[in-house]
Length: 104
Image (cartoon, rainbow, N blue to C red; front, side):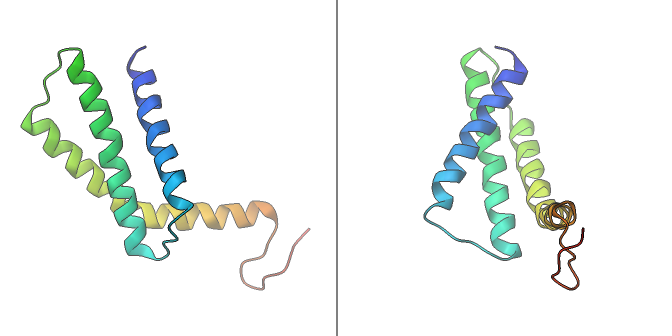
């Protein structure tokens, strides 16, 4: 497999772990969304780095710092994106957000 397969594997693994955790934990609010998304991004990045290190690519300090910054930015942008996607889901389902009625 190539780079796409490696990223697909890491994201699938993180998704499965998140799915298992969601059966036992219920987290609502902005701060838990940031924390969970941050750790999911860190987990996915670490899987990629660890599997790439098996092939001889040595992770550097700069790479690890970049991954931490990337995970932080992902965590900070997650709540607005979740809110936008939730709004779009309700709109596409035909539910009017303001009145709680169904529009046809």
